[in-house]
Amino acid sequence: GIALGIWFYRKAGAKDRDRPADVDPLEYAQPAVFRFLANKMWIDELYARTVIAFAWASARLSDWMDRYFWDGLVRGFGAIGQLIGMFTASVDERGINAGVDKTTIGARGLGRLLSSAHSGQIQIYLGVVAVGMLALLLLYAWLA
Image (tube, rainbow, N blue to C red; front, side):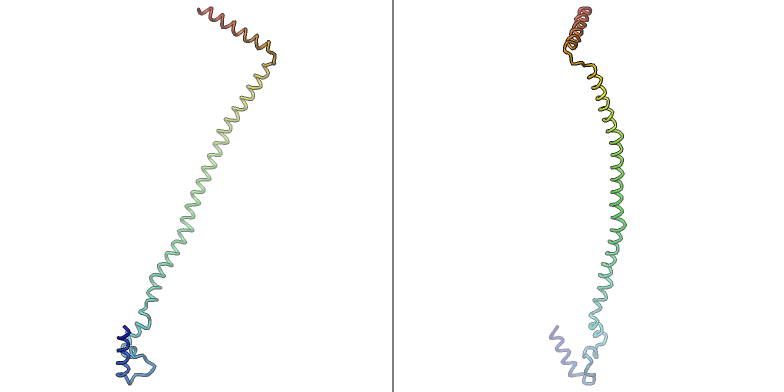
């Protein structure tokens, strides 16, 4: 490439004595090729209209997807989770806790009833056991 450039510019410099001094020999000999090369083969413009435009469109699409799709999806699942939490809390408070509370209230009442029936005197307890054993002996004698 360098040798070709040296050859062209030496040849053009020797041949084109009528061209102005501030004009490049390639511009004078091939204006279309010179303009093509001077504009860097329009690579920057092509890059801006393809790669940069695609990156910009991708960024806009990603921003929209993040703001409206993914964020909405996350918020939707969060709302569903909150609804499930409220439902299970309601079932727990009204169903499970209420049942356990009623059971403990009943057990407390039964305990009070049984504690009032007990006087703490052993003689009464032994009398109840003796009456029970007598009832069992009579039942056994009657059935046998």
